[in-house]
Length: 414
Image (cartoon, rainbow, N blue to C red; front, side, top):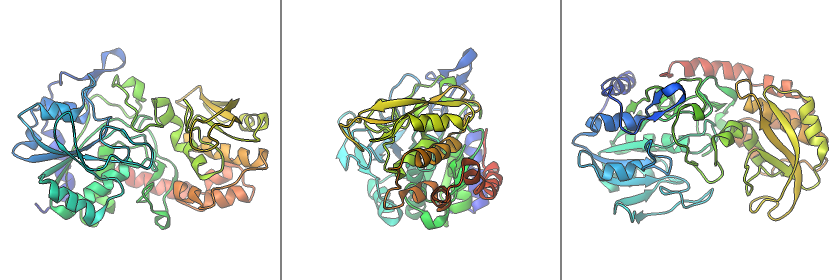
């Protein structure tokens, strides 16, 4: 099926509007009894009419669940109103058995007998060939995002959309909340020179969008061959909602994203992956605990002196069980968000980098300049090396961020 780009976007909106308004049995209830229904809830409530007569494959992971914590693959497999014939697993795998940088490979799912195909590190024609070999007509995407450009599932979405277009497959995105709200886009915008799997296209570091909105953005702005795209929006979600206000159950989308509080800080503190400090992997508080051997109380004191809104920093000591400094006791800080409404995770991450470099003589960037790939620019690294303060670093991306926000606005659906 071939449509113009304008027609595709109209088709996406039309698919949403056609869904029945009756509540799904698994709808979650947030504050004051407000029901939040995910894209899957609405699809199921409509009897899977949007997938009628099609052989379906689902790109998902352990976060693809209903309000009563059943996996959507198990639910769809048991329902003869939908012809589910394949599952596609991203990084960490469909059932979530793999650590960062790993996947589950090709296997048959023991629970359903369905073939599970590995999408991790596949893109373009090789991924299109996987979709073709599976025999599906329609690829459905349902994965919980964390709200940051470098969280790879949104680029799995991008790669799968591109591959579906190449393979001539329809693509349907089932929406889920941005767990850290969709209020605003924050941080530097990716320079295409630094495009990798932690950032394929020029979007902000904290994009402030849901996966369905991102799919519309990708289709309208970045895909040279747009997908035959439909999106199924949520009902009852507000852009100001943090995850605990949705009433939906949280499932860690990856092993080092255990709680919604992790996601709250992640778009800023993940930048420490680009340094020689631990970003807290191997602890019970990844991305909230940061440190290295030789760091002492002076870092927490310097970070608190910045008086950044909504956050305080505690001198902390910890011993990671894996990753950097495995089995060693290191010093650093714990990030404590006390007012999430005023908290800016990206600015906080920059402030922590600035003060880490100033207060610890051992500070260094990773030799591969991974920080440039995470931020999508050289300016963060070079400005901090030149002695810039937090305001100067943040100000460097203001024009690019304003331009992205103008584009982003056209694709918001809530």
